[in-house]
Length: 175
Image (cartoon, rainbow, N blue to C red; front, side):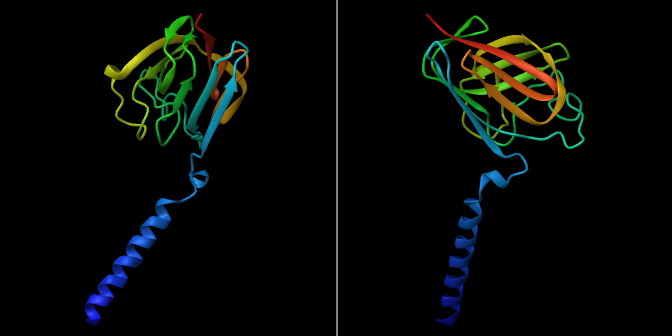
């Protein structure tokens, strides 16, 4: 009887311990979560949820977010972007909805990918899930940005900024 009670107590302690750690504060992660919410002047609500990795001495394009390779555009879970109306992204149609945001960086431009797969950890990308791809010219910022940051404004301009790179993406309401 004592051994059964010991087993039950150990199991309860194990599950309680695991549950407590599963509920950890995500803001304490090395790449903390962040979000951007904006309504554009033409009435599109944009919501972006992502995590913010830091360079930590790594070289952008070589050690992290490698040039020519698909990058999850953040850290941890898939970065998501949603629109409450049909939009034009760099002039190309994208239906309202929620998407995974992926990128393929290069020296002078970046391919921005809106994927129908938006749930899960930031691995397992497949181009069969692409809803839209657009190419945008990279801009250079000064000073360098240590922690990856996404910003958006009422004009519909979304900026992905990291290191010396700024990736500007233009969003407009589809008419």
